[in-house]
Length: 419
Image (cartoon, rainbow, N blue to C red; front, side):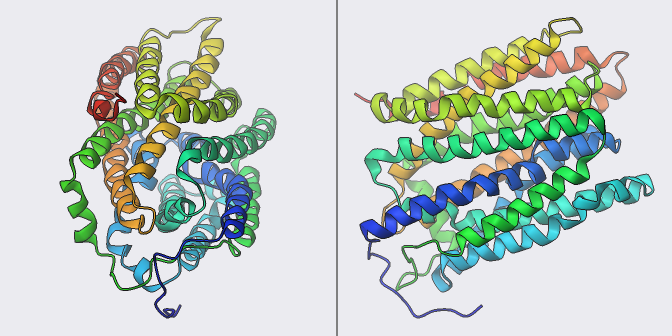
């Protein structure tokens, strides 16, 4: 990889380049997010549960991709030296290579317990590292493609399309797991092939260069937090996402371990999770552009708080599956709105000509805090469950606490109220 000559970072993309960038971003995000979900979200959680992993290990895995965002801060200066597209491709190649062992999950599961967990966890760790290197430049690339007044709608479209693709993948996965309880290898293999499709598409992405006179350094990025509005943004967003990432994986674990859900039934709730995004994302984008980001953020976190409180009363019964499906659907719909709204706030705070420092430092701070949250949650749950006669009351108390914390998380964002 060799550095290219310095370019003028202030030169905007042409209308045709921005349009091409939007098309390729949307098209490449469809296979990529399926790859990303398969190797970093619910599927790895279920795979680790099938291998007998502890709550602590599951919590670490759930927060790993976020926590590893810390590598983006020292890597920020790479944007001064190399094209963003090159860094994006490099990160994806690392994730693609590291995830390959999971395609052979059946063979790994037949190994000694500790060896199998080590291989799976190591593969997921290196995959997450590659995803985070690519994330270093993904939002800075997108920032150059979209006009400020259409940020909400753009992210509504891009996120709706990949949610729909993930649903198709998960429906197929549910049908497969209904017949092959621990048949994760085929699903990982399909996702791995979709990663190759994404690689071919991102090769042609245009970019607005930030290579030039100013070197991007970690300490300069951290200095941006002297600005009060950016501090309040990060506090509100980190608070909300930390609770979300700490709580949601253990909703799935509670269903599997305390309420007896099969892998197939658990995948149905995951399908509902992405369906909530599909039906709501574009609407949230339009609402955010019209009514403002703060109104959407407040509505979303109060709604999610009510959902966590509902989990605190969930028990065995005929309506448990229906409630679980409704919970994941509504949770996704509400957090989709929060995600669109907070992204609009972030893009408004990031300068159009040199957005990387703002986008990367906020992603790193958010990633480290939110990545620690599920690991800490797992570390708290492990001893409580070990000393409890029944696991369900422990999970109920956990979700009651999550509901209280979530209900307060919008308060730092009040600075963004209109009028």
